[in-house]
Image (cartoon, rainbow, N blue to C red; front, top):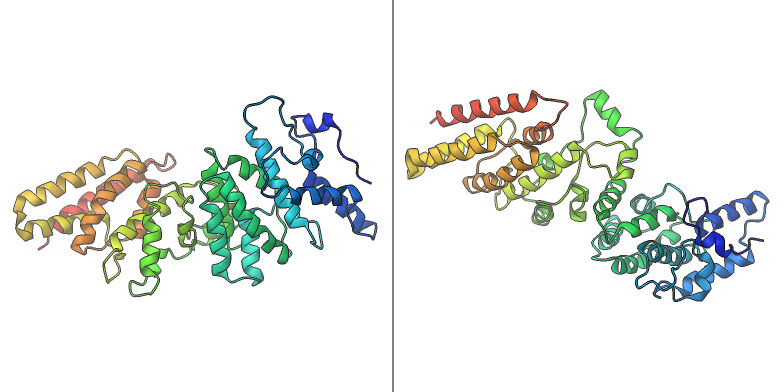
Length: 392
């Protein structure tokens, strides 16, 4: 029989101990190997106490005391975030393990991965799964997040899908702090992972890349307006942190990097290009992604149009100055800032742009591994600009 941990073990701060859900999983595995899979009386009693803690404030459920591994400090004005997160994780684990036919703590299965598995199981429609995950991901605080998870976890149990509760506790700990962006990015990348081993390396070796969203966009589709609105909502936000954009990313990335919520140059460049494309495409009934139309050419056509429209040399000179400032951008963030003011002008003029080329420029602009890339890009854009302005 498994006995309750001693007070000394509960209060230790190192990671030499196992969390309750880890102990329960080990106990189940040991009993299954013996031919009689079952939890001990202590574990069953504790699981009941965890379910009693659902919706209760951390530290107010005496029966949960011995399930905690982080101590409740005496006389503290506020509960430590780690203790609150552990309380929430314990209650969710209690809901998940209740009546489950196997141990539900599954190391390595993050929330995004679990929802992807739920989607693939066909137990719920893809839209229903995505809606529930996005509802959780847009929670304003930990309390709201836990409420959404209390409705999501029973669906995982019904689909016989496990979850890494140690990782979930770390996610909950980070939710109300600066770590939330990485948690969001990880959930999104895990959920959209095509589950192809080493996809990033395979794409690199073959030269093949998934077709970007702007290349497949259909202005006449029913969902076009909603999709563009979702992409515009990511303007100025870190890549991967806007749940409405998750399904529109196509950046090839190895599953191990997705699992970590890695913020790569490739993902950041695609994110910026998607938000710019959405502003460019808005209200246009023909695709604004136009192959081989570099930014220099597009800006040159805009300047030419300003001159032909009555502004004369003054209008062209103003556009040339604006474009010259853009070319002096010291990094990709500054370049994106200038692009956000230029793209609406291209939108109103109906001038297209090659977003494949733009994404590459954003990716390489200040990459120390490609010191000559930005020089070549500036020269190319400058040449295309003057060629376009000289063409009637």
